[in-house]
Image (cartoon, rainbow, N blue to C red; front, side, top):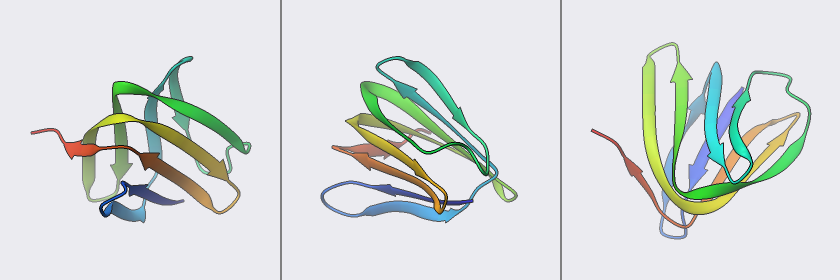
Length: 84
């Protein structure tokens, strides 16, 4: 599935992913390909994990939104930083 992590300053990451795990204000949300569409509010200081064939990426986000559509996942974050 296509995934994009975007902040007001830049596109932080985009590409094909097998799974996304995001911390929302309602708890952890796991998204597989062909997930039902939804909108969620990202928890300030929460994590977003993106699993790809080339490895996993873990970001800390400063609030924002997650949008899941038939076309993929969009993470619209106030801030997003790659965790070391």
